[in-house]
Every structure is written in C-alpha cells, then in structure tokens.
Length: 224
Length: 224
DNA sequence: TCGACGGGTTACAAAACGGTTATAACGTCA
DNA sequence: TGACGTTATAACCGTTTTGTAACCCGTCGA
Image 1 (tube, each protein chain N blue to C red):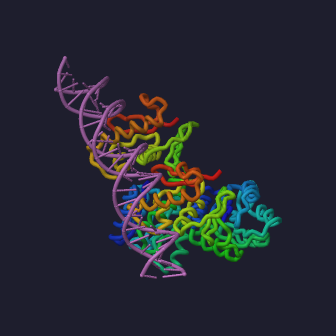
Image 2: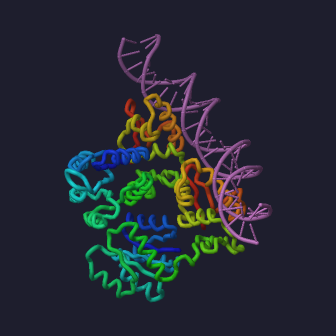
C-alpha cells in the first residue's frame, strides 16, 4: 500500500512518514506541489495526503491536477478554522481532510478509513481467485472449504502475496512487510512462515499449487 | 439506535456504516431499493438514509412507500447540484438531505440532529438479537431474564460490540473506544472487562456463546 | 565426486496470548 | 470517616504463536 505525502514542513512530513511506515505503509515524500505531481506520476500511489499551503503548487492545484486523471483517495491537511479552504478542497474532489495539529493516531485512523472506503483494505475482504481473506476476523477461505484461522504473521504474509498475486515478491520485501524491520539473516523465519501457511491453505502442502517458490527470488501466489 | 442505510455504491455504503457504527449506532445495510424496503419491514429502523439513484426502486419510491406507513425520519443523499431532486424528495416526506460528497463528520452531525428533532435521541435502547441495552438505565436484558445493572465500562464495551454485532472488533479499537486513550500495555484491562461482562451476560461464562473471542484479532458479539 | 548453497522439514525453546483469580487503589455516598 | 462498588495492577496457568537451530535433500560448479 503506497501513500504519497506532500508537505513543505519537513518535521511534519517526517512525522507523517514515520507514523505511516510504522503502520506498514510505504511512504513517498514530496516537499512541494511540483514534486508531489511528479511523484504522483512516477509512483502511482494508492492514497495522497496534501498540505494546502505549499510552495510550487498549492494543495488545491495538485488536487485538481490529480483529479483530472485519477480517482485515488486524496486527503487534505488544513489549518484549523479555515472553513473556506475545507469547502473548496472537498469541491475539488478531496475525499477527506484533517485540521492541523492532529495526532498520529488520528491520521492513521483516517487513512485507514479512506483506504477502506476506497475498497483497498480491510473490511472488504481481500480476494484472489479461490482465496478470500477476512482481515478483521483473521481468517481465509479457500474455495468452499470452511474458513481457517490465521495467525497475525500468516495473515500479513498472505495479504502481501494477494496484493501482488501473480507476481513474485522478493524475500526481502516480504521480510520487510511482515516483520517491519529485520536483516537478511532472517530468511529462516520466512521459510518457516511459508511452510506453516502452506500447511494451512494448500491441498497438498508438499506440492504447493498456490503459494509457489520462485527460486532465488522469492514467492508468488498463483491463482487461476 | 438502528439506522437503515441504502446505497448502491458499495464503498460509500461501507463508509456510512463505518462512520455511524463508530458513533455507536447499529447500521443495517441495503444496496438497492427493494432490499431497502424489505429491510425496513423486517428491521424497523429508527432512521433511514436513502440514496436517490438506486437500482430496484429509486430513493423516491422507497421514501414514498415508507411514508405510507411510518413517520420515521428519512434522509436523502443527492448529487451536488440536482436541485429538483431535492425539492421532490422533500415533497415526498424526506426530513433532510445531504449532497455528495460529504464528510463523515457532516453526516454524523446531520444524523444526530435528525434524531434529536424526532425526539428519539438516547431513550430508545440499543438492541442486537436477544440483547437489549438501556443506555440511560445502565442495564442489559438478555432474552426474558430480568435486567442486569452494568458498570460504566461494561456498558461502553457492550455498546461497541452491539454496534458492530456479528463482526469482530479489534482489541485496539475497543481499548480506544472504551477508555479513550491507552497504550498496548492495557490489554490486561480489556481481558478483565470482557471476563466480567461474560460473567454477567453469558449463560455459561466458561463457554461464551455471545461474546466470542477472535484469537489474535479481538472480540465479537454473535447473535442468532 | 565433493561440498557449498538454497529451500523444505522437523524439533524444541521462548515469548505472547487469553482466561482466571487475588488484591490494591479509587470514588462515592451515607 | 468507613463501607461499598468499581476499576487498576499483578500474578499464575495452559495454550498458541513465534523464534532458533538442526537436519535433509536436491542442484550446481569446481
């Protein structure tokens, strides 16, 4: 899940990036409007957070530009009490706003809500082929079998694989996304986690159909 | 407090439901006019939110039907700028309207205003299945047993679970909603609160039927 | 042929989790 | 103030989940 955050206040930008990456999102930073637009083109983020007051191009202009070509959720950051800004932002197609100052917790809650609304996370069960994932319940359902309970790590791994289903995801990226940190020495963990997940979701865990190994590269989820 | 929300836009419907249930309302969803009417009959909601553009039966038709048998408050969702729609909705007996797009905050404010106007704020007990909650009296009634007194925290917890009945609510969210703040060290509090609540409302507290735990995820209220 | 390497498998220890109970701190009201 | 109901803190237990380590077995290049 990739989020573009644009703000000319370095400190705030760092705080936002920190908060979101802690929560497992990939954050792309921009410190003015022009950079933001460029980053939007090149990175194709899943969500955009824009400060209204920015040099280069204001949040309004950036939002307007983005809306000419994309329906990606946009959240605007406003200074408290600037009601007209708010109205204008919503008219330009922003999906939500947040008044400064705000707590990291609030930011995170809103971001999640927005992603949920856009159907890109949680509640709307993630699905790929015969696999359906319910993030709230921590369960998967394969085909028409009864739902299985997954542990936190298994869930995160499967989430990543589903999000990139059909393409192989490198071991390093999986390590990063599932554990959040970790050096390269922890391949063992991934090996085992994959093993356990296969035991649960594969018909014949010894001959994996869905969770396939890409030797030397990583793993991929194959759906019909 | 039960709210019926009908919209064919799945994402928007999810957002509305999320916003309202966060605020403690029980939300019933419908994705077209026919479903909406059926749900209205079976659920007897305290407030209805209708999108005007829906397959099956338009918001107008649903509103008209509802008005033939009930005075329940109805809020219509319109697209910005469709003024005639608005007039027609009000003529058909709608009590309020909201132009899309709108912020969750606005929605909540309007809903509260409507309920207040209808004089049904607070008083009516929250209910789910065999559980009926009286927020004013701080009591629950399970089935036809005599009402039990709940403490403030027990009440808040149960309120949250009822508002999301059938879906699991994460421990973090519960912590947040019940205590308002709290870090991760306070899982202990939740553990105990759940325990005490089970002692009160479950027939066999050792084998919970209603207040079930979703390991690794949180808790959920299961009603038949 | 050997041996290093990558991946799979197995076994087991450490940590986290959820349920339970006991007890201390707190608040309220007589 | 003291008794009582409520909430917070802590400890204990059994279970599940996660981390650590070892071994197995093919492949591949020296």
